[in-house]
Image (cartoon, rainbow, N blue to C red; front, top):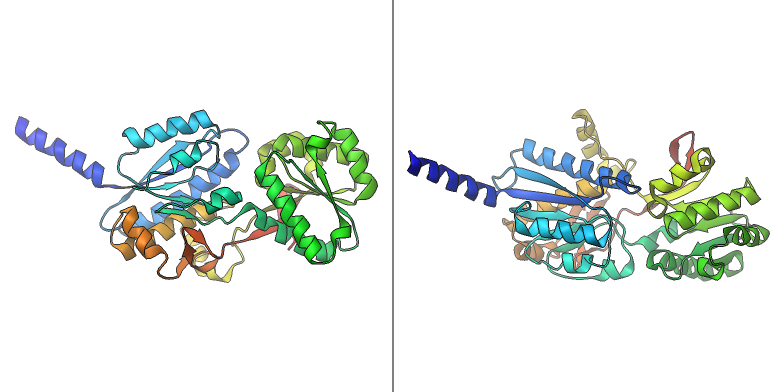
Length: 363
């Protein structure tokens, strides 16, 4: 009897070790929880779809949710979990959503495929290692969408672009906006403002912005964006405000309350109107499953990984890396090719206006 128990225990361990595991590292609480929940939901939908169809390479997929508290200390803890057993059998890691100073060390493990589904600053987007894929594109790509809307709606108005010189994301986007305006002979329509030049004197900053502009594209961290937006509205309640939803986070809406009405937001395309995704989306809706927001990116990450695994006939990161650059792969926004783990085309950004508690697309 004891021998049988030992054999069963050994088989259980072997089964657990060989199971296909997908870990998603995303925030569960705090201002970024909305985006973390979207990612987790999208990943779960994809995992359910694969398991309902029989699994992957004969294995059912186990989903592991790990909280990303968006701090270096929490990422260190989650990294240890993935290495010491709670994440044993993990073949794919999606995330982390937040990119702190420990992330580069965290993603160096070439034994595990990792897909980063959110838009990234240039340094993270260009970072390269075997089995690391970035499908969310770059933060700076929002600048093109902003300019398209500007041309159609505000071409005769001056726009203030506000950024933080010490924040890579906001600085990169501001520089890209300036470059696009200059390339289109509209350099005279753009005015740049750096928070550091005003030492947190948001009222003074708002006065100077309103005096020269009709639109503010506000970048920076959530508190900078919210504080300046409040002061700009105090100066001129009709002043047009444009923000990056991921930079502003839920903090912006909590603090602004009803004053968030009429604010324009930039965020990644949810693909709901994309012809490539229509058939797949209808099938998901029939099953009462539909990824929302960044959930589309989480869903796309798992389905992409599934296709790569099937083509490689292996879960090994080295095998998957060999097939990744060899052909076109399907994502909700259509076929894509990879170069060093970077999509050469991605889903893009949309602009929305927030009204009556809903988002209405404007581009």
